[in-house]
Length: 137
Picture 1 (cartoon, one colour):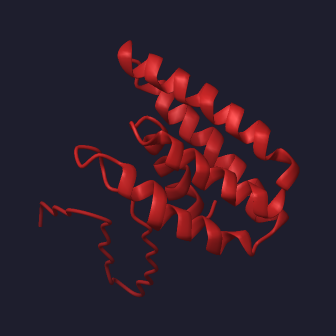
Picture 2 (tube, rainbow, N blue to C red):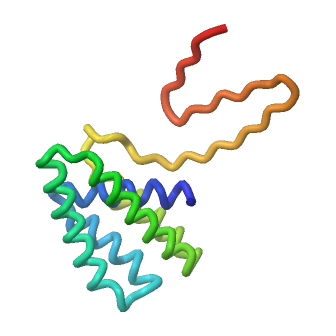
Picture 3 (tube, rainbow, N blue to C red):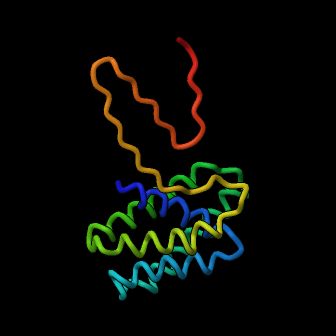
């Protein structure tokens, strides 16, 4: 799955749990309208249900529901990209301009990281998307 789509699904779910969730919903609807305009109303309703489930899960201390919801929305975004690869630019715009700014500072930042490495012979590669600790010889 595209790393941008993964980050977007995570950010969308985190953003719908905020007080400004209507902005998060509007951003998602804008993405869907680009590919499937007839699904906009259904997507709004599905996001409202997802928000209710997420808030209930957080209230009950259920950490798995948030991950499951993020998986669902990542898959939905991936399906949009499969139907229209050009929508990826719109997803990136909404991620950067709408969803990520809505996520409270206490939550992990959503970043788009792409890393590539090649080691040959007895070479080693160390990559980290955040802090990295190496211990041992």
